[in-house]
Image (cartoon, rainbow, N blue to C red):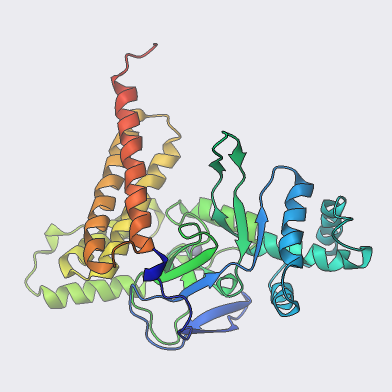
Length: 353
Ligand SMILES: [Zn+2]
């Protein structure tokens, strides 16, 4: 699997610079094509997310202490909460770290803990060991990936779990030279209020991305224009109607219309991601049901399944065999199919039994 992934040996197509008001950001140094690789990075610092806070902290410490001086310096430079009260409270997590560190290292270790808190990505899901015990998940810090800012309508897709310990970032649409590279820190098909609440709670910022501000997006305009150029005599009624401002309905319409326009244009890598976004939207709608309406849940899951199957089919022409993005989507489609089978079974069972 790893053979198909470019690891290093190429220059990053972006620079890190001041993003004005939101700290640092990554900006494209050249035009980047959809489906190209923006970044493959190995995780530098990681933590086993044990339930016990001391075990958790010590696993992070061991990983940090194994680093070279130069790598430690890179970790300490990343963004973290500098509030003295927060720092003081975090000291308690090191109560059982006496064998690992001396008292005068405590301050540095508090910074490491806060850097991890602010920048970690889940790198390995929780899983069952052969003896049946649960192995806790792991989360890690990536130096370069930590500089990618958030957008609820990001131009890049990423995974940090598909290939353990590696962050893989791929543009979902063409990125122009000078444009900021963005990823979504949260499930980006959640409603606006939920997205804003999650970002405030965990990352302490209010999102000002195009989507949250309710503006039209360059990408959508570009798709519309390309569509009209390719089909000058097209009957617009065959497509979902154009954009309306604000709210959930507008978001749904935009996501599905993108998929429709891309389908008509047959731009393979972009279409692939258009289908993924649409699938993710229906997965999100299902999540919001919280299992309250099985019939509706079946409908949402089946719609997600259809878009995922489409993505898998397009993936065959876009990606090399075994490519991580494609494999990830195949696994995802499989998961949804299992869920559909479960719902169908539950609906068939006579109620009350
Ligand atoms: Zn936003």
